[in-house]
Image: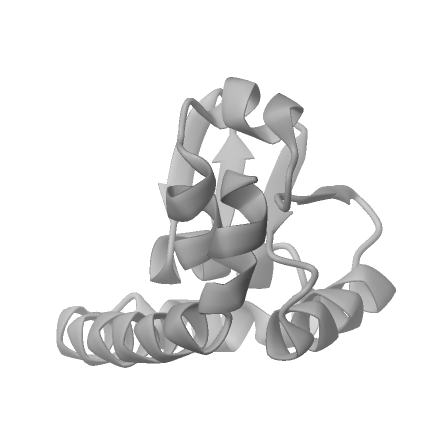
Length: 119
């Protein structure tokens, strides 16, 4: 089973997090989404959508946001307990909300990137 992750490598926080995951699990293939037409074709998402959230493709299905993190964490032994905990309904919804808020903040923090992409 191949898992492919799509992330914004130009975002310092995103890059740091993904580099951490790369050290813990080399089986996930990571793709930088900045100015990457192949990523757009593979995911059928726009550049803006790809930059806005983390995305994972597993078994030809795309997951984003907290659901993408749950797939990543499931693949890393030290995070499996967290995956089970976050999968609990109330905790999942809280984590979903927190992720979305952080993703919006990071998206607008990196909004200059969107100007570059449109060029």
